[in-house]
Image (cartoon, rainbow, N blue to C red; front, side):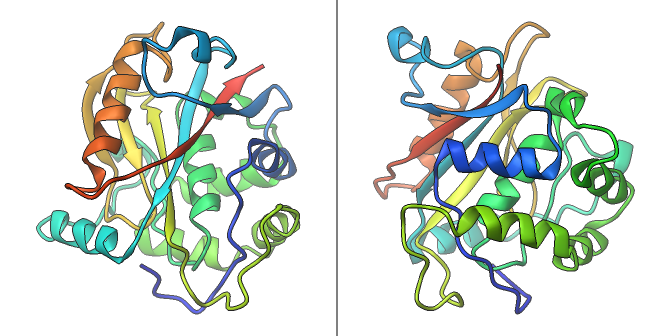
Length: 244
């Protein structure tokens, strides 16, 4: 997955830590991550605990070696995403920093859709999104790898998790973060995962009044997760980025 020699401490799947990270980067305090205990639209009681609207979902799933192999096979004929600006339905960051999949999932969540309306002017995330929007794939990779302020924000949050940091930071974790969100341009639902070549269109289009906890969105995400292992059992934990 990684082509650089830069290594981060893995970010624990904890909504409080993810919320702290986006606030450190400059997102409005009106946005926060919340635990999402189900992907089933019929579980109305569990969904009722999550504020609406939900702008993005961040999932973490087991990613053993076979998962990477399956992605490589799935994408062998797919060109790497190299679009920029108005060419993109969603803004995509290709991951090269080892153990930073949680950070890339966060950046995908706040760089797209209605979440962009909650970027505070003059903040680091505002400058980063503005800088990266007209850039191609290689330029975005360089921008993130060389961003010391981004690295510092991530490190300050990742070091505070309940899980001890790995003894060897060069070993990639056996889990993967991914983001699901609604395009502000087309209403289409995409899966974004930095280790992939490109965003994945889930074939679902949401209306203006439908968020990522709507029945259509949850069914599309649930179907993707169930098929992610191609026969290998896949569990998950999930968070929703919501307006509070």
